[in-house]
Length: 193
Picture (cartoon, rainbow, N blue to C red):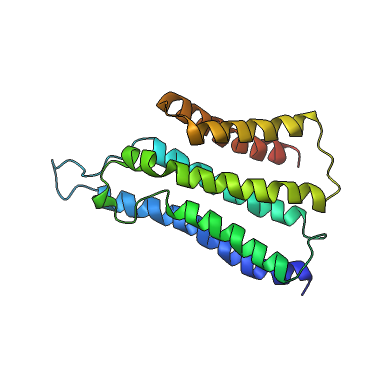
């Protein structure tokens, strides 16, 4: 077993729990939303904001997982690495657990839930990326070009705007930009294979 395989046995599990937390929140909400009979309206209004936030968290965690793979050869293994990884995963887990309400019927308007908890979720994502991002560049020989710098600048700018703006159209637009950015990265990587 390599050092990275040893390290990744823990973090693969933790990152999987983070993804499951968002997906199970969505499933819990959809189950609770179903009307109890014909002609009866659903009790829960889902809207666009919370599902967009959930999609962004899923994509961001997936990118964190992929970035972890890029440093597999140079990642030092020790208590500091393990503890730092647990802290970062804990921050992501907290963010993931706040995307959807634990009891959907207690929060029947997910747009209202979003406005109450988006800063916690996006703040955790921002903190984790500010901590993790520089490490990727220190642990690899990657020298970003202008396009990579522009992508990172767009990511952090959109994230900060989504975190602090009070205008719904601006928050929706920046979340859409963040989701689109991850989607395009996936398309570009797929096309380059």
